[in-house]
Amino acid sequence: MFDNSSVKVIIALAVIGLILFLFVRWYKKFKFPKTNCIALISGSVKSGKTTFAVGLALSCYKRDHRAWAIRKFFCNMLRREVPEEPLLYSNIPLSVPYVPITQSLLLRETRPRYRSIFLINEASLVADSQLFKDQDINERLMFFNKLFGHETLGGKLIYDTQCIQDLHYSIKRCLSEYYYIHHTETRIPFFIYCVVREERYSEDGRAYNVYNDDLEESLKKVLIRKKVWKVFDAFCYSTLTDNKPVEAKEIASSDLKARNIVSFRNWRSLNEKENDILNS
Image (cartoon, rainbow, N blue to C red):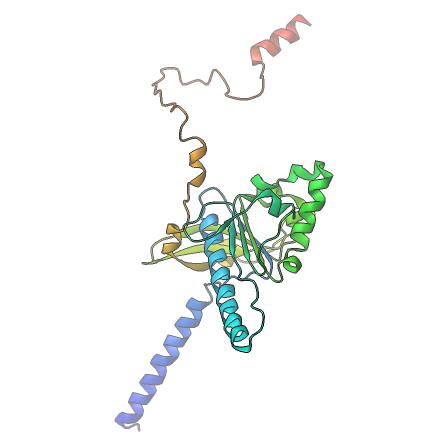
């Protein structure tokens, strides 16, 4: 019924269809994150949130810097004023050219270059939820976040933190994107993939997300090149305790009952409470 050429065409079409089907299935498991203005990445300790944040910041910076280079070319050709060159700003050291973030920038006493990219690591250490007691800083931080896109003429601000509830309200109210990172994998050569989920943040401090399927089915993978690890030190804050004496006295106890609770509170033992009751 079919000659050899027809069979070959049918097999070729079937193979192409199968490849397209598998590609679509594979493609749906990945996410290509973008940030319009202010993005937040949250996740537990050493989950890879800083890797994700640095990767996202570098991606945004390279894209915006290429756009500036094209504008510069045409401005020079048309003898027009060249716009300011965007820069990368960061509050942690990077091995690529960057400008350190200072309090004067956050308080809007100085300004960044237009269309620049900001990376703020461990954002709750910069401005936490208890800072609302200082009205002046509240107003300055609210203007910094609320007007960041306007005052930088389209710049982007990327935060990372362990828990969104710890952040200053001026950050939480201005988010355009919020990603939760579950973990990272390194099994693919030359690439890391971060397992993430895009969240929705509500005004009362909680993220309301409804999942009809298994929670892990809502996770997507974001590919990041492994060379991002050469850009920053994942343990950069270790320098704060590197010079302190090491406590490493090991013991093997024969008494496996916990006689004390290590705490900053002055706990009273159960016996003392019972004696108080007997003596009262």
